[in-house]
Length: 430
Image (tube, rainbow, N blue to C red; front, side):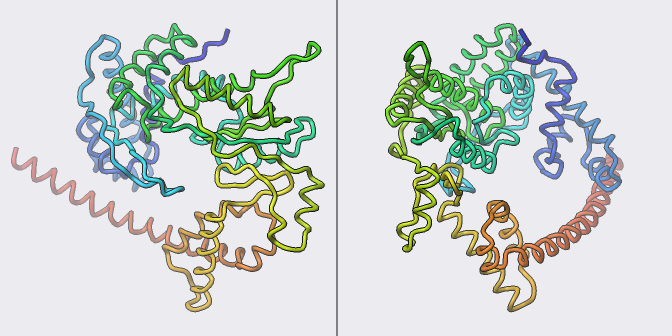
């Protein structure tokens, strides 16, 4: 049997340090930590950024890997690692939905251990997390979700006619680290060091629950959900020595699940069994967010879409990840469309009045372009001048990118001079 975890090594610690530091070299808390614990002055980091020298960053990653070594050794020997602060939380708005969530603030050593455990558990994640699970998984985002769901609905072999959506109540708060450790003890009993590290992180977590905002926690929740989804997919009945599952596919966007099946009764039984099993096994309460929806056939949808009045053209759909997926077409949620249209309308008005777009508006337009990039609606693109706006927005974004780089280089030169002056002053005092 293939080993589903990675043994601890200095190379693994270095990869964890490199994974954590990637994209964080400008953060003050990271620079402060590297100065205090890794022994890398920020002046050297600034100079390496100016000269594109990677040696300083490699040295920093090596030194942080040594810190990870010490922390893992302390945990395995039953000691408390140094300089790990308690987890604090703050209420912040979700950027996509606007929902206020209790987001955790983790100290840097805590984040390093999370990256280390996630890298060590990569083989297990790849073996257990299903291809139909999305969110917080590289390559599995909203676009992949809607394309995959549309392909399943259009597949004649699957014969999907009914769908139902569910989600979990307080998903992260209901998932205990003890349940995750139980899974690890069953799947990888020989990975003692990983189990101890995860147990230690669980002791740091408020209430012993998964943390919203943790790098490792998103992977662990997807792992837990994979067991529930596999259980639901195994439900069915045997007729004439042939097993027929209740559902053909289950699309999952973190804790939101879309059950797809051939019959109404099968979907209802699968959802009921899934909810009971998740509550009994992991204490996660599942609730249905829609009734059982009958998806129209291709002919029925085409007939309805061709009706005279707009109110008659609506078709049942699976609403997940910001998209509404029907058998013959995909649309966006109205609130998402409203934001896209508002951004495009205001950008076009600015172009007509001033010949350019404000910098803030450029960011708004480009960030929303991804949701309409794959659209085949030429009428929408022509009505809201999408191609012209995006061409101008990209040119403006490139200009501000060059301007930002120029200002960054000037700031780095001034910062290096200030650091050198401070170092000379400290040398004279000593």
